[in-house]
Image (cartoon, rainbow, N blue to C red):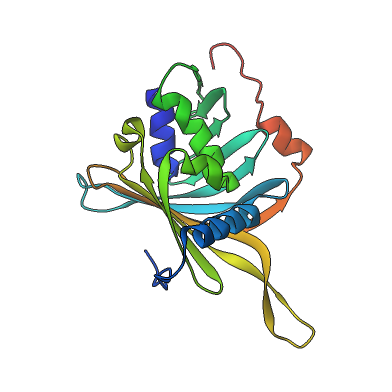
Length: 234
């Protein structure tokens, strides 16, 4: 469980100026907005891109910054490849987690269905990366703020197991716009997650910014990377 929790805290977690949800909005309208956001966030196939993660720890004077690339597939899971300040690879699926350190050594952890928080972590990662708002609502109270082209979703844990790990989680992003023949920008029904922020109960903050995101089917190379051949003793 320790490795899975460490992984999720490491990659999940600033706040921009948002227009608040209008007071006259009903709960039904809020549900409609959440449903629309969930639909807009659902990836068309896999999503890949780059990340920059800044971890601010109370025990350290300076933040820790790491960079790398990621691939998320609703079927395969999440592959998180850190390249700076040192190489590290993490592959998370619903059944196991694989990690490879900078020396090329692999470690594998199976997800036990009875392992409490360890079982929730892969599901939460998949829900957050895949825009599954309904799944998130089972474990968090959700607050959505929207402007014309930006959105912010704040998650407050309901479950005691999750409260022990996360005080709050914030996701924010933008709606995809397309240029019309007249040259004006029109918002489409697609959205992306540009930033993910995690606040731990002790005040540590992990802030991740995503860039250069592209969606589409997994390449054969990516598919093979999700199932690496690990030799005994590696």
